[in-house]
Length: 348
Image (tube, rainbow, N blue to C red):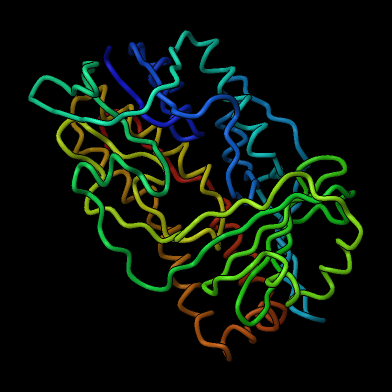
């Protein structure tokens, strides 16, 4: 085959769609069966929705008007200028992408990658030979580690927890609620269903974190839980490089800063496109350069916000400051919502 993709989440499936469109013979290996759920904010910006629509993928969900920051009596809204986003259950998105991949003629196999060998002509994974390998196997990528590209992360070790509540959404915004040691992200994902995710550097039970948000806890009182609490972390993951030989890292496997500013799926789609362009051109260093360019704005803004909110006085002042400077808050949200500009083949 031309390309083997290990990891059948959104990053791997998007890479498969771009590869099939480019005429490559591609296979996806995913060790888990069916639609895969994981802790996720589940919000898609307009740019990600446009990219999905190019493949005829229109996952149902709940339209999102913008982002709202909330801290006690203080709140500030920023509408998406490019168009509405959409809250979409992770499993719904996965199933829609998987159907598109199968319709494109891509082989999807339930397999685990254990042994990788490379030479000048290709890659051999557990006896299967391919021209190139894409590792899209997630935040704690075993392939990244096996290739020696794992780098110990710096900074605080933050974790995420997510639960769904059966109740009607009370807002068309992604609400970000701030407390001293955690943030909570509330995303309407369907009629009668709301996703509530907690991010914090303090380890603890989900309900213990939620106790720091009395207004939100009151809104959720009496609502049934739709499934278990799911966790992810540590969120910060670093890679020394995005390529090794004829292997490319795509999505969370390529490195991750934090879920604080969202839109991991949109970045994964842009990386998938860039990876396939580099494979078609035969210049994998092109992908390394373009990965840095595609993710630069997101990495800088996320690190800046994490740094600014690490100290309690600055964290407490964040939402009141955004309330006094709504233009700055809106500009920041728009910068994060704007999709990375991809380049034509052959340019970087």
